[in-house]
Image (cartoon, rainbow, N blue to C red; front, side):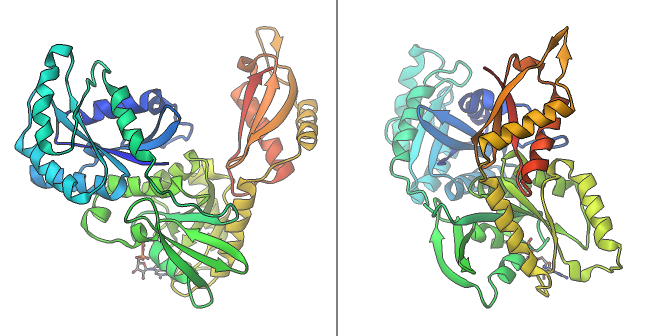
Length: 433
Ligand code: GDP
């Protein structure tokens, strides 16, 4: 999916426009307890285009002076986005801060669409002509608070999508990324995986300058490690700004089949790990939990079991994810990782036979009768798998409202018991026939 970033000095209305564009999607109820998504990165849709949107205004740069902040936000946008919406304020005219942003964007050579916000009525349209001076061609008048002009703006943005070269990896290639807080050993793990006997095929530049993926082949299977560059990039804005690393992680998750959630075995689990793991789950990717630095842990025969119990308690929503204990440093047990990645990936795109699925559902119903509400009973007619990555199942019923959450859970567990699906979330929903 192409990435759009909204850039502009403070108070031009970036967040308002962001919310307008992503619309109801932002208010989608989180189904992962304890996880709140930062609202700086979200998906949107216009005509037939799907895209991801970044609100750079939501990226907190810290105590830097005003201009330095604007500059850094613009640079993040240039790094991360395929198309940039440069937002200005029609009520205030062109300011020197706008000119500063323009200079940075101009040098980047990324496609830029200029928007003039707060043009709330037709009489104000004449104010937009000054903005030609910024050098990005025709300014688009919009009104975030009234929702005006967004269609034309998005049309202009979508024009640029046509020129974007998105990476194309083979269907058979397993794409995975590593996420985790700084210093858990992500880069070390990549190095360990790419060690001696793995042949690095190439470094392919992805959609953005910095999204450098690493392709390699192992025992006849092709793999791509998504955004290796982002993982290795240290210092500067990249590590110091938490929201920015989150953004980077979300982007990598988006492009992956399998996400490795890396935890520091020496330090144990902290709240931030939970949050990061939540992103992978919510995105519907396959997940493998990796406990790194296992070499540095004092162990007896119970240690691994205890650690596993601890993980299961903290990551209730990731009950399907296999756990691998290893050391990137000594490479001990590292050979146990790839089989789990492959397994998770296979299950993520697994299709089950409809007849077998229906046998499983009917057995489940025989074992545990469907719920009733106000004297009415839920009737299940049949079930079918409607999607992969992750596997999703539609259950056709008399009245979907009668499908109670706990019953849905029960059916989901029966499907898991029957087909496995280790490493991948699965979704089920009731549909009226
Ligand atoms: P990243 O920020 O997640 O990419 O983490 P790095 O790969 O840069 O590793 C952070 C630190 O942890 C470095 O000092 C590594 O040498 C160390 N480290 C990484 N993996 C291991 C491991 O398996 N065992 C031990 N003891 N240290 C490790």
